[in-house]
Image (tube, rainbow, N blue to C red; front, side, top):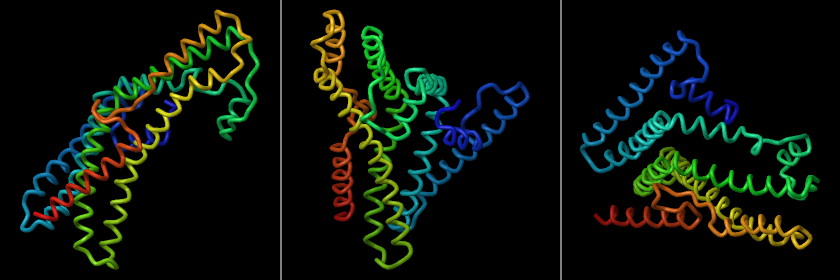
Length: 276
């Protein structure tokens, strides 16, 4: 598996992603190692959750619970990896298909430098249009697969982040502005905001770019093409009217607007918590 090598390597070393192609002995050895690591993770999450409800005051509960929900979120993500392993393997295989990888040095340079002004590769009109249509459909299938695999996990992340945001802000108000603990809480808050912002920002970019495909096709010199190819381009334009949308639990559409809604909901919950 060559897609995201560092991420999969870290998951493999920690026992949460079994490598493909292991021999019989290594396979069972890794299964035992994975069971041990999963047991430790879920035991820690369970003990932390129980410990949250053994508190003497509200500040102690908030401090324990804000950390506990993050561990529970990680546990849920690991469970998602186990349940959807075959789908994730299929997804990474799609990213290694010839449609998604550079076909020559020229395309490699385009990807490496993000040169949007690079010259189009000259090819036969019919074959090129077919590749456009196939590539366009492939991107939609890829986005659908991503939604299927990660939508529940993203929903869990949004829920946890919203809870942590309001609790963390509440904790910040009770700390000295110049204390080390205030700096640590601020850093933690920034990390949680960064997580959901990355989801929303890139999902929003995918949605915007998918809507621009139809305009890009229309702005090309399509009048010189045969009727058959113009009809094929019309298929792309019609399909691009329904943009790619990444959702959270099939409920919330990930976008810059949804990021601001999360901030507003967290702030409202903080006001309720502060007033109680």
